[in-house]
Length: 244
Image: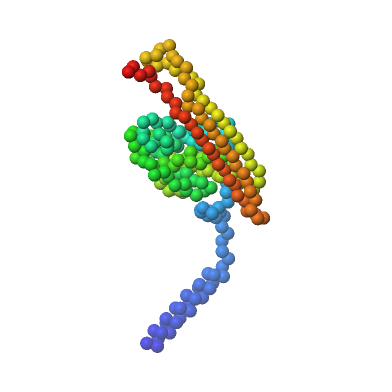
């Protein structure tokens, strides 16, 4: 028994000596160390691997339309904002699509935080039937500083609701200054239909929009930016003549 204990002690001493000798050897130099994570230094749109469109609020206001989604669809080719008719609530809360996929497959962020989707489910054969999309028009254009559109699937990073891509709205951050604007528009067209081949002039759908924003300084480092928009729109119709 004493001999076996002595043998165990000898084996342990040899293992300790081998470990100490191994630790004393200098470690090899690492040629390249790659760290994957989300808390990394931000990249510019020229350095990122995914296609990203950065759209300023000036580019949106130059489109001649006060609707956020309509102006965004005119600037970003991958964004589509259809106008379905006779689709119940979808006529008011119209869904926007990215790269032709379902509306709920586009992730909408506000300053990097998820924007909640609307409670309306698209029905009656409208675009994205069965999905509940984010109402982009609920954010006024005047409240946005820029919009970042990721035109590629990003579900591995953001989740299954980013299969089509990501739309990140960066709100205006100002501690001073402000502006206000008023726009007015009307549909003035010549309409030709099957029952009225000669055509007739239509002047309807007047739209009045008033927007403004103001920045306030709070303390030494704080700020408060207040934005608002008022929209009044009358209906417009391009239907055929009623034979009754």
